Amino acid sequence: MNELLLSVDAVCVEYPRTKGGILRAVDGISFDLKKGATLGIVGESGCGKSSLARAILQLESHTGDVQLLGRSLAAMKRHELRRARRDMQAVFQDPLASLSPRMTVAAIIEEPMRVHEPERDRNGRMEKVYAMLERVGLDAELAHSYPHELSGGQCQRVGIARAVVCEPQLLVCDEPVSALDTSVRGQILGLLATLRRDLGIGIVFIAHDMTAVRYLCDDVLVMKDGRIVEFAARDEIFESPKHPYTRQLLEAVLPPDPDQQPPRAL
Image (cartoon, rainbow, N blue to C red; front, side, top):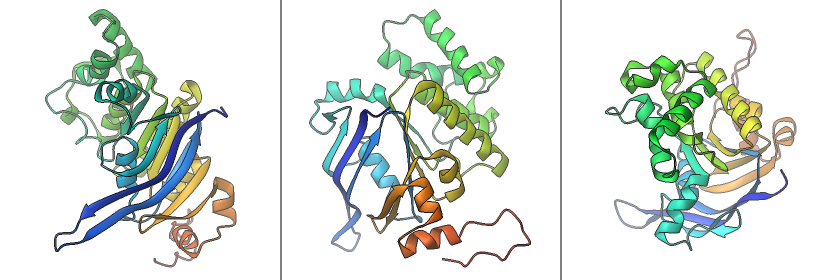
């Protein structure tokens, strides 16, 4: 559990502005993540969280270095990066949009095995598909359904099953519960916590929901305008935040009792 899984060193992501110039969405972010740990990355919309997630996954051009299990992803050749993707998977914000509407649930979950486990035959893949459906809390009869026939929570469970079917080391979750109803959010967070415990997966959990972060994460990185403004253990962040922006984020969390004084708006 103390072995280093992910190392992000001085990562920057820039985009051209429509009227000229450069927007630096991620500005020199650095952190380490140990195996089996969960890091929450929080901040308001537009602070660079999703750009950082895409850079970690090598889906966005960036400067700086990202190392997975001690190997630089940027230095890998294409076929090496393809193999490395087995160890780093993603769960996206919109559960329906992240699934192909033309594929059944079984085909969606099976697809990563076609790429990363070519030695497994069709029967072996389908056996694993049904095992994953059970693991994420879905009925086997949904295997032949299409995403549009499922609820948002069910679609997100399918997305999680697809992400973990090849047993990755790292799961990058980009706002995975923000599009879901409150009751379903709790179920998905519980599922992620269970998978982390059972499979030993390290998780980068990107969110603006501080309640979800407090439930799931070991450490919290607070971003503002592409930079880190605070980085500490979860309890330290929630009990004694140092930066004014972190305190603002915490003050914006709705109290569980509706009769309490509403929080001050950001």
